[in-house]
Length: 393
Image 1 (tube, rainbow, N blue to C red):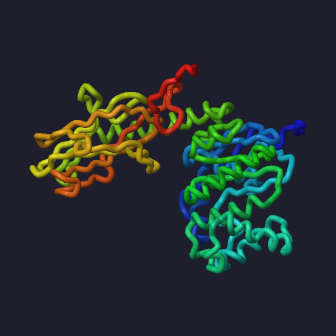
Image 2: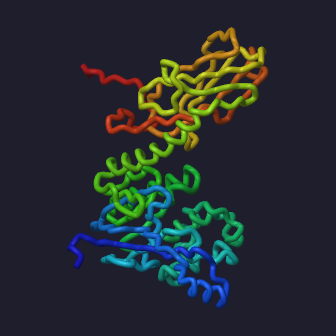
Image 3: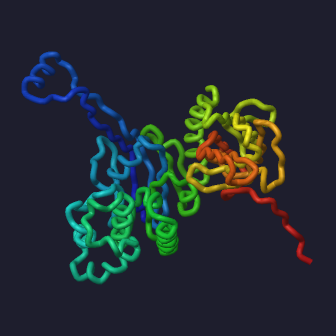
């Protein structure tokens, strides 16, 4: 029995799948397997003892690394799968946006698929005529609506599907990774839509790998790992646990790479160390990193370096020419204070001669580093800027 404010209640949920060990291609193989009394499959437990509830009007986040079980959970919520054990109670209408291509026909045009999806959502032809232009405008696909869907990129299909889904005035909307597609303008439209729906009090379940979105929009969140909930409640706490889990894996990979002899790239050797010269690839927010560069080309007398976030944002860049620094040998160290948000970064390196266009060697992706998350981080944003509060007289 749902409480007066609870619209989704998940209790003691279990889900497993049978994974075949070998394919039985005919009657003979089935008989052989039976005579051997060989079990032809194994049970894979995807979700174990999952319980949570979502209140009306909540913006609820579900996070987890790939393979954690969150996609299976979404399909259970949407009624695509049935649980092995446990129960799911939903009070209200629900629109799932959880898998690319569901309800789409690749042999139909974008226009035809809009009407097809609208019919699946329960809209009449007249209603779809009235909202067609706004759907296409939101998806930013005006030029492509008479092309067959099979010619669309996956991002274009997601944008179109999302633009249709949000027209459904359902009580609960489930969204899976919609913010991962589209350009900055489309993502801003999604952000504006989320803000509007949050203000209206619509119940939204958001599944994402973007922890900034979890902290910005969600009122509560859960994290799933290996089929179980390992963190729940405050979005900041859940986001931290997710980041920490990812960082452990990244840190192990980077440590293994750092233990190897740095490769020669264009006769250039690069690696990172701490300020004592110890080779490291993991640092805390606010630490200093030394980027070591060596080269053989005697014509090189200037160096530049840029710190790039894994998602592509350039954090900071400079070079010796614009700072009037002289390099006399065939190596240099570049020290940088890491007053940036936690995450994975890499260095882009540019070595050149007396001018910026002379004897240029460009390393697009140099050494990678991990900046670890901590609950004591003072960076709320991409960078920590020098600042001071002044008394107003």
